[in-house]
Image (cartoon, rainbow, N blue to C red; front, side, top):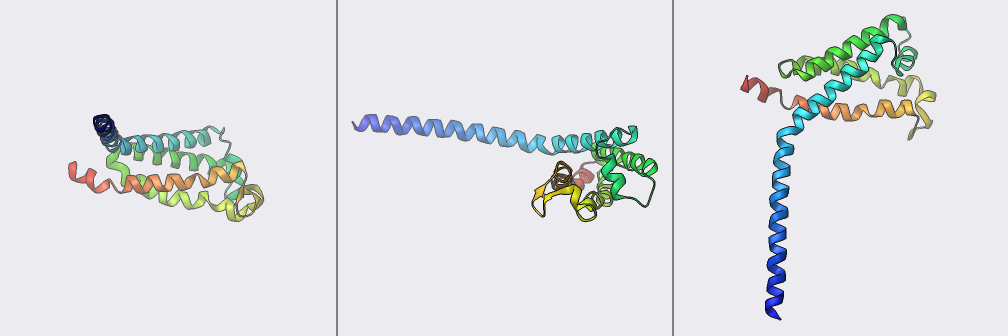
Amino acid sequence: MATSENESKDTLTVYQERLDALDATLASKMDRWSVPALRAAVGAVFIWFGALKVLGVSPAGDLVASTVYILPPEFFVPVLGVWEVIIGICLLYPPLTRVGLLLLALQLPGTFLPMVLLPEVVYTTFPYGLTVEGQYIVKNLVIIAGALVLGSTVRDESASA
Protein backbone atom coordinates (compact mmCIF):
# COMPACT_ATOMS: atom_id res chain seq x y z
CA MET A 1 0.00 0.00 0.00
CA ALA A 2 2.83 2.37 0.81
CA THR A 3 4.28 1.83 -2.67
CA SER A 4 1.01 2.91 -4.28
CA GLU A 5 0.99 6.11 -2.19
CA ASN A 6 4.61 6.83 -3.13
CA GLU A 7 3.86 6.26 -6.81
CA SER A 8 0.89 8.65 -6.57
CA LYS A 9 3.07 11.30 -4.92
CA ASP A 10 5.78 10.78 -7.52
CA THR A 11 3.26 11.09 -10.34
CA LEU A 12 1.83 14.23 -8.75
CA THR A 13 5.33 15.66 -8.36
CA VAL A 14 6.10 14.92 -12.00
CA TYR A 15 2.91 16.71 -13.11
CA GLN A 16 3.67 19.67 -10.84
CA GLU A 17 7.18 19.93 -12.27
CA ARG A 18 5.86 19.75 -15.83
CA LEU A 19 3.24 22.38 -15.07
CA ASP A 20 5.89 24.59 -13.46
CA ALA A 21 8.15 24.21 -16.53
CA LEU A 22 5.24 25.09 -18.84
CA ASP A 23 4.38 28.07 -16.64
CA ALA A 24 8.00 29.30 -16.74
CA THR A 25 8.11 28.94 -20.54
CA LEU A 26 4.84 30.82 -21.01
CA ALA A 27 5.89 33.58 -18.59
CA SER A 28 9.18 33.96 -20.46
CA LYS A 29 7.36 34.27 -23.81
CA MET A 30 4.95 36.82 -22.32
CA ASP A 31 7.88 38.79 -20.90
CA ARG A 32 9.48 38.84 -24.34
CA TRP A 33 6.38 39.73 -26.37
CA SER A 34 4.12 41.73 -24.03
CA VAL A 35 5.63 45.19 -24.62
CA PRO A 36 5.90 44.79 -28.42
CA ALA A 37 2.30 43.50 -28.50
CA LEU A 38 1.12 46.40 -26.34
CA ARG A 39 3.02 48.87 -28.53
CA ALA A 40 1.41 47.42 -31.68
CA ALA A 41 -2.08 47.31 -30.17
CA VAL A 42 -2.09 50.86 -28.78
CA GLY A 43 -0.42 52.22 -31.91
CA ALA A 44 -2.95 50.49 -34.16
CA VAL A 45 -5.90 51.76 -32.10
CA PHE A 46 -4.68 55.35 -32.34
CA ILE A 47 -3.98 55.13 -36.06
CA TRP A 48 -7.33 53.46 -36.72
CA PHE A 49 -9.46 55.75 -34.55
CA GLY A 50 -7.58 58.82 -35.82
CA ALA A 51 -8.01 57.82 -39.45
CA LEU A 52 -11.76 57.44 -38.91
CA LYS A 53 -11.87 61.04 -37.67
CA VAL A 54 -9.82 62.29 -40.63
CA LEU A 55 -12.12 60.47 -43.05
CA GLY A 56 -15.22 61.82 -41.31
CA VAL A 57 -16.63 58.40 -40.44
CA SER A 58 -15.80 58.17 -36.73
CA PRO A 59 -18.72 57.26 -34.48
CA ALA A 60 -17.01 59.47 -31.87
CA GLY A 61 -17.01 62.52 -34.15
CA ASP A 62 -20.33 63.86 -32.86
CA LEU A 63 -19.24 63.37 -29.25
CA VAL A 64 -16.00 65.25 -29.92
CA ALA A 65 -17.90 68.01 -31.72
CA SER A 66 -20.37 68.33 -28.83
CA THR A 67 -17.57 68.49 -26.27
CA VAL A 68 -15.24 70.94 -28.03
CA TYR A 69 -17.72 73.55 -29.15
CA ILE A 70 -15.16 76.40 -29.20
CA LEU A 71 -13.76 75.32 -32.59
CA PRO A 72 -15.77 74.28 -35.64
CA PRO A 73 -16.09 70.47 -35.70
CA GLU A 74 -15.27 70.29 -39.43
CA PHE A 75 -11.85 71.67 -38.44
CA PHE A 76 -11.26 70.23 -34.98
CA VAL A 77 -12.31 66.59 -35.50
CA PRO A 78 -9.95 65.96 -38.47
CA VAL A 79 -7.10 67.78 -36.68
CA LEU A 80 -7.66 65.58 -33.64
CA GLY A 81 -7.65 62.59 -35.98
CA VAL A 82 -4.28 63.57 -37.45
CA TRP A 83 -2.99 64.09 -33.89
CA GLU A 84 -4.11 60.55 -32.98
CA VAL A 85 -2.51 59.05 -36.10
CA ILE A 86 0.76 60.76 -35.17
CA ILE A 87 0.49 59.36 -31.63
CA GLY A 88 0.00 55.88 -33.08
CA ILE A 89 2.96 56.17 -35.42
CA CYS A 90 5.19 57.47 -32.63
CA LEU A 91 4.20 54.60 -30.33
CA LEU A 92 4.90 52.04 -33.06
CA TYR A 93 8.42 53.39 -33.64
CA PRO A 94 10.37 52.99 -30.36
CA PRO A 95 12.75 55.97 -30.86
CA LEU A 96 9.66 58.23 -30.95
CA THR A 97 7.94 56.74 -27.90
CA ARG A 98 8.62 59.81 -25.75
CA VAL A 99 7.09 62.10 -28.39
CA GLY A 100 4.06 59.83 -28.68
CA LEU A 101 3.61 59.74 -24.91
CA LEU A 102 3.84 63.54 -24.71
CA LEU A 103 1.20 63.93 -27.44
CA LEU A 104 -0.90 61.28 -25.69
CA ALA A 105 -0.59 63.08 -22.34
CA LEU A 106 -1.88 66.25 -23.99
CA GLN A 107 -4.75 64.44 -25.76
CA LEU A 108 -6.06 62.04 -23.12
CA PRO A 109 -7.41 64.52 -20.55
CA GLY A 110 -9.72 65.88 -23.24
CA THR A 111 -11.18 62.43 -23.80
CA PHE A 112 -12.65 62.57 -20.28
CA LEU A 113 -14.31 65.99 -20.76
CA PRO A 114 -17.69 64.55 -21.83
CA MET A 115 -17.99 62.94 -18.39
CA VAL A 116 -18.13 66.46 -16.94
CA LEU A 117 -19.58 68.51 -19.79
CA LEU A 118 -22.10 66.00 -21.17
CA PRO A 119 -23.16 63.74 -18.29
CA GLU A 120 -26.52 63.06 -19.96
CA VAL A 121 -24.65 61.48 -22.89
CA VAL A 122 -22.21 59.49 -20.76
CA TYR A 123 -24.30 58.13 -17.86
CA THR A 124 -27.49 56.16 -17.61
CA THR A 125 -27.24 56.43 -13.82
CA PHE A 126 -24.62 58.77 -12.37
CA PRO A 127 -21.86 57.90 -11.43
CA TYR A 128 -21.72 54.20 -12.27
CA GLY A 129 -24.18 53.47 -15.08
CA LEU A 130 -22.42 54.13 -18.36
CA THR A 131 -23.82 54.51 -21.85
CA VAL A 132 -21.87 53.13 -24.80
CA GLU A 133 -20.24 56.56 -25.08
CA GLY A 134 -19.31 56.41 -21.41
CA GLN A 135 -17.78 52.97 -21.85
CA TYR A 136 -15.84 54.28 -24.86
CA ILE A 137 -14.40 56.99 -22.62
CA VAL A 138 -13.66 54.80 -19.60
CA LYS A 139 -11.70 52.34 -21.76
CA ASN A 140 -9.08 55.07 -21.94
CA LEU A 141 -8.01 53.98 -18.45
CA VAL A 142 -6.56 50.89 -20.14
CA ILE A 143 -4.76 53.12 -22.65
CA ILE A 144 -3.32 55.15 -19.77
CA ALA A 145 -2.04 51.98 -18.12
CA GLY A 146 -0.58 50.82 -21.44
CA ALA A 147 1.10 54.20 -21.90
CA LEU A 148 2.65 53.85 -18.45
CA VAL A 149 4.06 50.46 -19.41
CA LEU A 150 5.45 51.83 -22.68
CA GLY A 151 6.85 54.82 -20.83
CA SER A 152 8.67 52.48 -18.47
CA THR A 153 10.66 51.14 -21.44
CA VAL A 154 12.03 54.37 -22.90
CA ARG A 155 15.25 54.38 -20.93
CA ASP A 156 15.92 50.75 -21.85
CA GLU A 157 15.36 51.57 -25.53
CA SER A 158 17.69 54.59 -25.30
CA ALA A 159 20.41 52.49 -23.72
CA SER A 160 20.18 49.80 -26.39
CA ALA A 161 20.17 52.28 -29.30
